[in-house]
Image 1 (tube, rainbow, N blue to C red):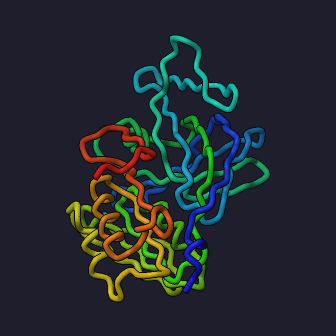
Image 2 (image 1 turned 90 degrees about the vertical axis):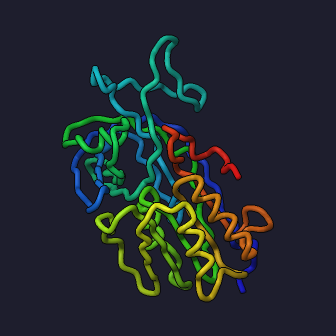
Length: 277
């Protein structure tokens, strides 16, 4: 059985940079998912890529919806700064899905769920080559543990980019079980293939679906397993409760990481905010 200490996450800090990026390509992935590949020029500091930091994210700042102007802060004492009276741009956090470093700069892939009429969804729906956005961060990387006996990774559509990274980056020495909840069968998309991994799709919108699936695993979650989950906040509370009922993460953060990316009915929820029971 792995040493429980090995199931703690690691942390690596990065200096803050504010970057301009230009849309190079837009690729439909199926369902409501769309990949936007951004080009950062060679003069721009590259976005760091850390293996097993599956939740690494950048804050994407969008042009003003009416004027089309993109106003970005400067960095002062490693903090973003805007002059007094300047309106802050609308920004949302997105997982760094992939990076490709080349002589002409870095390509950065971000996957969007296109739904409704929110600022990020509307921008992603209409994005085309040549459009410009701003990028802030990442401020740090949290690396997932490499010594688990089994990895149990659960999420909804918003977690698909991170789940894709799990399938590509998880240690080959342990089984990986990925569970994805989507609202309808049309949202089932291709994910990276991996030996020793299983991918289960749950179709529906129930808040307890992912937690119920975790309860029903055979064998159930146990010592040495690592549970990672991300998605709608209330559903994540249920997943966290289910994991702890099986003894996963009962001692705190070790062996369990649950992230509420969004909350139904709340615009722009800060996923760094604690999950509310």
